[in-house]
Length: 304
Image (cartoon, rainbow, N blue to C red; front, top):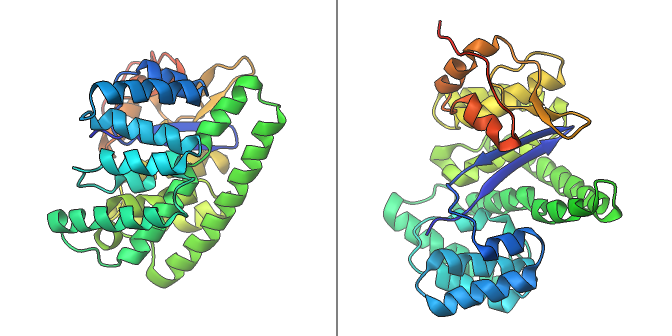
C-alpha cells in the first residue's frame, strides 16, 4: 500500500512541501476530498471499494476521508482492513486520522503495527517514546487539510484564522513537550526511536520560534552528520534559520510569495551552484523542486 503522506512546513510567509512518499495519480474521489466535498468523496471511495475490496490504497483513502468527516467507527473499520498487510508505521503519523488518536482502537492499531515492524526490523529501544513522537508528529501535520479548504473562501476568513490559532496552540504544546524529551534523552535519534519518530522532532522544531530553532539546529546538524537524522531535512532548517536571521539560504528550500500570489526563491547564495549543494545533502534539483509552485528556474548550474 502506498500511503500518501505529505509533510508541510509553513511559517512567516515561507511555504515548503516535502513528499515523504510518492503520490499516485489523483482520482475523482481524491479531487472531491481535496475540494472539501467529503460526502461525495466517501461515496466514490465506497463505490471503488465495492468494485475492488482488495485495493488497499483506495481502502486507506476511504478510511482517511471517513476520519476527516468524523465517522469514527467506519474509519476504524476500513483502516484496519487497509493495513491488514502493512509492515510499516507510516499510518501512525497520518494527519487525516487526527480525530482517531484518542480512541482506544488507535492504541490497538499502534500495538499491531509495532509488533509487525519489530518482527521485520527488530525491537524499538523505547517504544513508548516512539509512540508519543508519532502522535506529536501527527498533530504537527494536522489541520492543514482544513486550512486549505478554508482558504478557498479567502485568506482573511474567520475559519482560517481560527484554524491557525489552533495550529499555534498545538505547535506550542509540541515544542514544550519536545524540549522536555530532549532534556532527558537528547535529540531523538533514528537508532533509538526509529525513522518516522525521529522525524517528529525535526518537524516540531521547524515550526518553532527562531530562538528555539537556533538553540537546537547545532544538535540536528550533529545528528545528521552521524546518520541519526536526515540531512535533506536538516537542510531545510538551515535555510529557514538563515533567512529568519537575515542571512542567505544555502539550499534554496525556502520560497516566498509576491503580492500577486506568485512565488520566488529568496536570498540564495551562489545560485549557480545550488544543485551541487543540494545533491550533497540528498535533495533533488532545484528546478524540479520549485515546479511545485509554478516557478521556472533558469539559472545555469555549475560545479566547483
